[in-house]
Structures are given as C-alpha cells and as structure tokens.
Length: 394
Image (cartoon, rainbow, N blue to C red; front, side, top):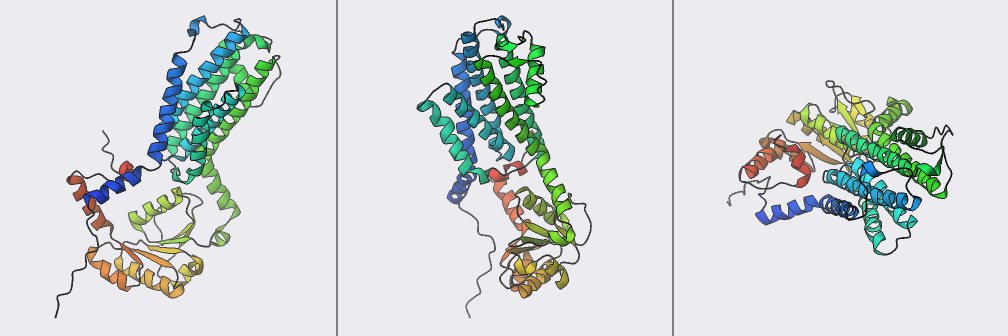
C-alpha cells in the first residue's frame, strides 16, 4: 500500500515569490507618496529661486504688483511644504492624508488656472488628482493620532496663508490692515464665516484672495472635522437611528464569532476597513459604541439566525476553543450552505478536524506566526502593509 503523503498546511514561499510579494505590498501607496513628496519638494525649490523679500522687509504699503508676486510665490512654497508633509503619511495609506492631498491638488490647480498657467503646469496636479481619485480605496487606514496631526497641519497652513496674504494686501482692505494681529483676526472671522463687516476687501485682487481663503479654508476645516470627529459621529448616529432590532438587518455581511485577542483584533480591523459585519460574543471586553454585536452563544442556532446567517457572505469562527469553532462551522453550513466559513485553528493538529467540519478555509495563527518569526530570523522581508506591526520602537 503506498504511503499516504503528509498534509503540509503551509508551503514555504520561495525568495522570488517573497520579493514579488514585497513589491506588491508597496503598490500603489509608495509610488503615489514618492511622486507627491517629489512634486512638493520641487515647488519649494522653485520658490527659493524666486525674488522673495525677508519677512522683516515686508510691508502692507508696498506696491500691489509686488505684493501679489510675493503672495503667489509664497503660496507655491506653502503648497510644496504641504505636499511633503501629507505625502509622507500616504506611505501608511492613511485616509486623512488622502483627503488633504486631494485638497492641496485642487488648490494647486485653481492657482495655476487663476494665473492662466496652461500646459505643463497643469500636468502634475491634474494627473495626480485623477490618480488619487481612482486609487481612493487603497488609502483606507484610520488612526486617531494621525488624523489629529494631519488636521492640525492643515489648519495651521490655512491660517498662515490667510494671515500672510491679508497682511501683504493690507491696502486693499477698508480699513487697511497694517499689522499681523489684525491679519490673523481677519483670517479667523473669514474662515469661521462670522464676517463682522468691520474689515472689507475693496479691490478685485483682495476680493479674489478672500474668495480663495473661504473656499480653501472651509474645505480644510471640513476635512479636519470629518477626519477627527467623523468616525465617532457616524457610530453614534448609527446607534441612535438603528437600535438593536434594526441594526442586524444586514446583507452580504460577515459574521465574526468568538472571544479572545484574535476575535477582538479582527473586529477592529473589519471596523477600520469599513466592512459590514456582526460580531457574536458571550460577554467580556467593552466594545466601541455603535459596533454591531450580539450577546449570545455562537453555537446556538437562534443566535446565528439573529446575526443574519441566511444572508451572510462569510462566517469567521475565531474562538479560543477549536471544538467550538468546528461546531460554529457545521451549524453555519447547515443554516446556509452557500456561506463561506473561515475557521481559526488554535492548534495545528486541529486543522484536519476543522476541514472535516466543512470549513472553506482554515487559518492557524500560531503556525503562521512561527513561520513569520523564522523568516524574520533569516533576514527575510515582509509585506509593507504589515510593517506597522513589527516596529522595533527605536
């Protein structure tokens, strides 16, 4: 009788395969970020070669033509610095960085069109804007700290632009703006749309400047508020508008069943990626407000039906007990034969049993983790999207 071939659940990838995986992990956020940073650095270098005055020699009483030239050239430098600052977070595929990059590209396009710069000056912002919109789904990571940092950069940039611009064009206002405190005051009341009316633009140039300050400023502030408060507001509204009875009316969603660290972290990842899912748990840790969850036993037929098993696209059995995961898989297949089941094997020896339980895919985190550690010990590289999980803290 021929000897049965041993079951090898994890095939070791070749060096060439790992290299191509590493390259795929860099696409498209690394090329996009590199182009954005390079374009921003180019704008900064161009502005350094222009005829700029030291800040101490600036005056609101200088000629209008010279004031406009300094303002335009300084705006190019500010936009260039902005591209560099938001381009670096694009390496992490951050959604907030994507939003502010789109705003900066729109402002750059508007500035070139206002100056009637055609041709090559529109290629970079226009091409990058189209690329950013097409590749939007690749920049979906949300981190609260990054949202705060990028939002602060955007807010301070627009305040600097408004203060600096209104000071340079000071004679175009009534009464004239002669100091930076008044410039800052005018910028804040303009962006906040309060508009007390005590300072008004009286020349076409200053009116166009105020229009640009309003459009760009409101866009930046709206994006900052959406980045910082948007996720919390969305969850709260969802909790109010869709109470427990209505929240579970889902379709083509994921059912995540189980307790423990794997289930907790999987729930966070699904939420960060804005995937529709319901989590079944017995009790335990406190979850973020508004998250779809059912308190109950995932091996109970009634509980799985409440989670919408008939219309679910996938069931993830991620409990700490392999026997429970096998029963969850069997029950899910009985209730909905078309549903895909991903079962977590806490022990490598449970992989075969979970396959017999009709799981479509069996994942053994311990085996994968040990293989990854061995690869790292050999000096192998990993995919870029997992780099944030392996930071050394140096």
